Length: 329
Ligand code: ADP
Ligand code: TRP
Image (cartoon, rainbow, N blue to C red; front, side, top):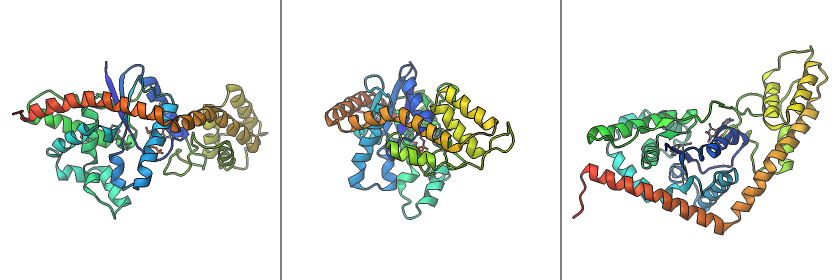
């Protein structure tokens, strides 16, 4: 069976964009592939999180992914820093990664622009650690967003280079992976563009109903259509996009009709959309809180995940050491 692997950032909560764009697909993938999902808590050190936040961030993200349907009995879900073999492979791979190519990476250049006060070596070697994450399980399919394409390209390069230097055909070259063809881009409700954490326009699974109502009621619209059957401007189109995602076809048809005959009242549409989002997110919110508060369960999941991940990782590391030329005395 083919192996799928993806790293999950341990910062921030899941919003509807993350859910429909990524997590929902992970949940489907776990039944068709040998899946590894891990929380990239070593990568998160590159931005210097506070010790008092680190653990809680991991716990939140873990609870959210499980609540969304990633089944720890099916997929291997673990925390990166629980698998020391990854750090060891990272060190070995660093010897064959060149400063020039790392400095040219777009994500590095972006980061040094964003945090000029903290240009650490971990940022520079971020793609090397990402490569270690992937090839330690010999994963061949990596579901990542567009912003990670170059990092994945680097991972391929390092894996290929290792094979070349040691004249082996050991590592599989990882490829970007889209599960299914239904790539969605969930828009924000602030007029233009996508929903995103850094865009500050997220509707989160963990949001209370009152928060969701407030966010949806604030959505940008216009004065309303003046002519029957006119095309919708982007902010209105975005509202309808969300409505299609969250509401019953009858509801969508009702508001489409109202838009087309110019009788639409955006207030009504927003109220309906807010309630439909709440209906969708409430079971997730409840489940997230339940899991988050269940220390015993989480501890079991994390231990089990680490054991499974280490089994596969230690085998790779052993073989890599042999290929490099280490021998036991
Ligand atoms: P954010 O920083 O906004 O939470 P990330 O860039 O960390 O999002 O993305 C995490 C995953 O969620 C990626 O796979 C990305 O493609 C997906 N994703 C994020 N925002 C959206 C969106 N608005 N629509 C669809 N997918 C999204
Ligand atoms: N860099 C990825 C991100 O920012 C997270 C990540 C770390 C990852 N290691 C990975 C993704 C390995 C895929 C494979 O989203």
